[in-house]
Amino acid sequence: MPQVRKSRQRDAILCNLQNRCDHPTAMELYLSVREEIPNLSLGTMYRNLNTLCKDGQILRLSDGGEEHYDAVAHNHAHLKCTCCGRFYDLPDLDHVLHTLPQTSAYAGEIRGCSLIFFGVCANCHRQAEQNI
Amino acid sequence: MPQVRKSRQRDAILCNLQNRCDHPTAMELYLSVREEIPNLSLGTMYRNLNTLCKDGQILRLSDGGEEHYDAVAHNHAHLKCTCCGRFYDLPDLDHVLHTLPQTSAYAGEIRGCSLIFFGVCANCHRQAEQNI
DNA sequence: TCAATAATGATAATCGTTACTGTTATTATA
DNA sequence: TATAATAACAGTAACGATTATCATTATTGA
Image (cartoon, rainbow over all chains, first blue to last red; front, side, top):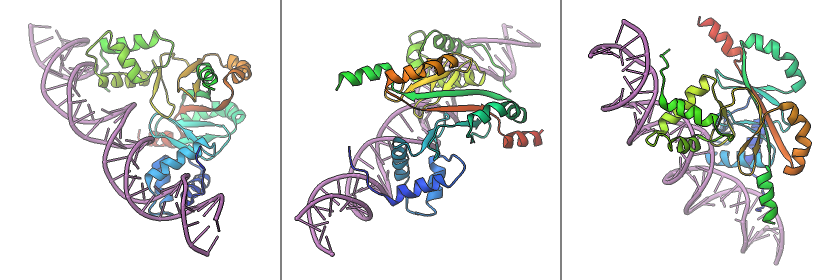
């Protein structure tokens, strides 16, 4: 495994993501960080987003189109607008469960939800053990 | 809104997806349905997957790479293997909450989860009302 | 039967993401 | 502090899943 070095670009990307409340796409974040580092490369953005995800410092939100990124480390729920595609934080699940009826009222309807756990399945676990 | 007509291709796609237990990608489903309709076009696959999703007959699972599709209409949880990328059904959420510790034991760890509600946000709801 | 048009097959285009390459910056060591 | 090793970079080409286009075929209502 290669050493991980300090990088001004990665610091700027993480810092920018932490200082905003939305969940931007790679391009949105790229345009924003370029105000600080004008010659930042898009490849650098993607490379560091992957590094930060693997490192657990940021979260990747998949919605079928572009990926969205979230600097909050702990797991929490989101509302994805099926109309504009934006992600909204629903930070407290207890709160969500209590307010969903009202949310549903103003939003017309909750059309569905997706709950996905990430882990290692039995197949891969077995294979990994055999390859030790 | 255009009329929706009967189509042998769409019927075959939905039927194939309903008769399997995994959550295939568009390409996996395409290769399978082509055994029945050899000259099926990939564009037809994608067009009908979108139609079926909008119609609520199938579910689209996003995981950052390719999309996966699920013929089960009601919302339920999944385990996505972070190693091989496969999706596994966790059909009963009560069951999940009780067995997650054991699941965690055999799988090494649950690395995280993603809970996303889909609906219409306040912004879009307001705009839609104004454009009536 | 026939006109209107939705759906198709084939293929080109799109676009978010990844890979490649030569250069620059960081880090450990002398 | 100089220097060697190499991680990270900028710039750009390549990739691949998905969407759009278009001429043709199939469905449907009259």
